[in-house]
Image (cartoon, rainbow, N blue to C red):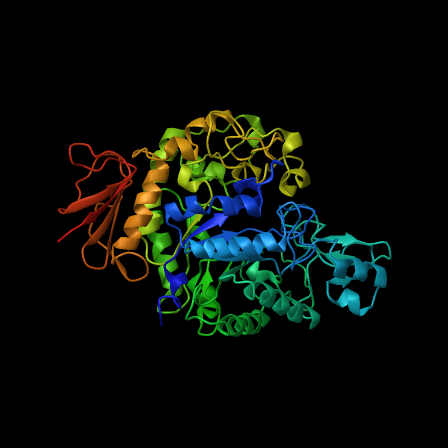
Length: 542
């Protein structure tokens, strides 16, 4: 294999939520022109690829994951010409572009769903979705419920019900209908032909549902093995076909081999083994790493489990600490994690106490752990700035359906999607050159976290990430490859990479010694040559 064939195995991928990254036309919402204008920043950061969250035409009922047209750009974000210009300019900087594919569901305004509504029961148009008659008592076809709250079925005027495992405006496709896989193969070809390097598959294990749509049993979790809308056997044939399609594109020129990463939250080796088999897709997100408690034993177990899942397979499980669906790392690590991970916690009650200084110190150490682990790493926009979760968004400004559908009990994901601060002393912090408000309000407290404020400051989170990514590229021990745990105190993680690289992460209550050698990077300040608590270091030993 050439380096181009294997770029995805050890890449640093930067996740871009386009609406919140940078505004190029002054309307208060980010767009593709804004992303293109910031490519020098991303190149300077040192990333290998960017992953773009959905930019397709959408009512934005679910942040763009309710798609009207899979082969177009929403006018809010620009045009297809803007997309092509972005891909070309990114290539000039040596940066690949990965896009989101949303194959489980579409928008209720998609032309197929509108045709299904018009055609009526028993029509070929309805076969593309999951329409069913209700039970004799007038209730929905089964007891499934939506991930956004409430039943997973909505009744239409002619009496039938359609399935939506997410919002009612997001009807699920019927992947047993031949039209659907053909349609998505055409979608993939459309974007691959435009030069994208890879795809991220949303709700990857949920495409097929058990044919008889059985009720959930009382003991079943909302997702997981055995659930009738998760991991049906037909998935393997679909992913194998996608792998053949991706492999049909040339790998001997930039962007190299095309790759796919699956969104899957499972970390059981036996459950995941079939998705790691030869001929399946390239990566399965190691998302369980995000909710691992900040304790040495828990982190070691999570890392071992992820490496066990991959084994000697070609498939990899990229390391992830933040994304657009999860609380910001600085906030998670600055409070009681069990509390902040509880989705039913009332964040409006004023009970949340977050120590952002502690969270920031831990997040800096976590960055060195992330970039020292074998394989690829995904960095969510603003993670490199140390941004915190924004809780005090006014209710009337919130847009996540989780908030509306639960009556505000779950505040949802808006707090990690607030537009980035680039420069200046007050909002909009250079996010937009226009006079429009940013689509979600930025906190004034971010004035010290802008790119401008952090650039060149050796003690900033941004410079820590820049240095760590640069060293990751220059040190042959890092990236893809083997790792081994080294003898250490139970509250310390010490892992070796290759010949002579050691990461030490102190999660105990007092300072600990570092291995003898050259310490090339520390997430904080050493104390008399010792590594303080909640601090990590990279050391080259002879």
